[in-house]
Length: 419
Length: 104
Image (tube, rainbow over all chains, first blue to last red; front, side):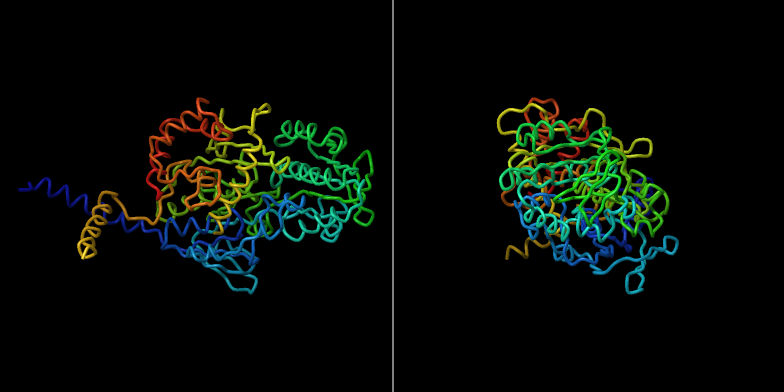
């Protein structure tokens, strides 16, 4: 027979349990702007973790064109169609797709204005707009110049244009890649691009040269790239660092001229990877600071400038984490889980995040960088002792294996996010 | 016939699970710190022709052993040794238990 005391205990437990169940039922409206690796992942993860949420993904393009592996398209190793993914899978996962642009955000009124003037109310907003080109930061480089000197730093028509220019170039032509100062999307990207274009030139236009004009003195996976270039593309790739006068100060699209403080280079093909900033909607929402990027706290990636708005992916300032698709995907999953906690009135726990990023120096030669991150003193910081580059000296099929991992990763992440 | 027998069993199992869980039943669980990043390569979905091993539904003790050996360098790896060094034993145990509980 139950004593009065145990009976009291039981009722106390029941009355404590009841409200916690009610408050834990996170329901609400989350709007996600931007359907790339960050936004599409965030939308799907929110819905998977808490099916009661109404999750709307705002994305004007019916098809997403992925940047990772788009350098293979330049070297005719892939077609652009293999980079493209629709949103059927995202919709089947229960996400409402608003195929339109977000034109404004009312942070205090908690709504997003769409291009037709209608408003979407939210309890939490996730901005994952990726990068925009910082037009005007490089004299002579504007939208029309990009039609002559493609940036190809947003995959799609620009990628196809650069490939066509390379194909049309005479053997013996000079290809110039201009690489920007930090921070920018995909830190090893310009050097993977140089590698794969060199791979293609060596086969098809072996008298040609590739010049990298850099606004930096150091770059991601530098020794791995440079060792491989010396071995595979000797005399083909020349890298000019900032201190050697590599910073591009102006371009002239009509004459395909690329100017530094010390020289003017006439290119046969000029790939200008220009300075960048957070996507336009981030500026409009007031979550970007004077650097052009978005400061966030390191647990839920909520803006430090506008409460209720989370920023993930390339547009956010993520401490030690680079601007990569892997990072955007990892941040999106952490952000989604944290939003579910916040909507339920709970405090999200400190996360741990991983970044892994592969680059190809040749189709069967891969190199990687990894990092593990946690919140520390208000930013996402590298966990000391973890992460780092592929070893400089390897035996056997190590580089080939990393190239295989690279393509398996791409297949995995695109299936997870868009499949 | 079997269905009729199974239904009440299932229902009581679900009820029991919701009591034991001490909270509402969620559609999915985001896992302990670090776990969600792993799925960037080790996916929930089945990926045909991938050289990256699938770990969802693997025995927790196997995952723990691999992670510790990657971390110490006892087992060679490309990227996993570098990643494993970011996690302590307790974190590895929690991640391994979570992956072991995911559908195979």
